[in-house]
Length: 146
Image 1: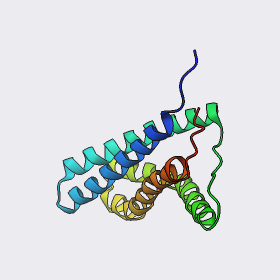
Image 2: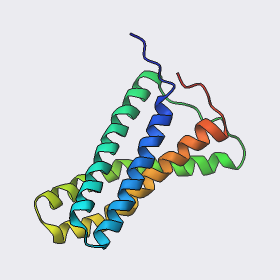
Image 3: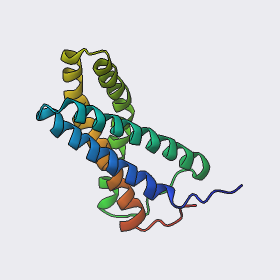
């Protein structure tokens, strides 16, 4: 069975957008004291992140890397975003897990402390994931997807 991989980069970007929206909504809900809504949004952000990671790994396992075709001043900009995104994407996993575990264990003092660090990093990773997709597949037109 041969699966068409060409739709996966767009799916991955969409999952990043969904994650970012849930993170922001969850943040706003907790600031309003809406604990249940916050918990639901953050759970959905985690689920969309897990779906993203599964799709991303599947795509890159079967497709490999996609070269950035841009030249000139955009090249160092793109790679600066990509490198910071990649490093923070790795670092955010234990932060999200720690935030989740402290919440589930009702250790809200620690949950709040770690989540203040987790929130901006997770949001940055989600948003820059979309920017990377946009630059790689639309602005600089690498259409060699599958």
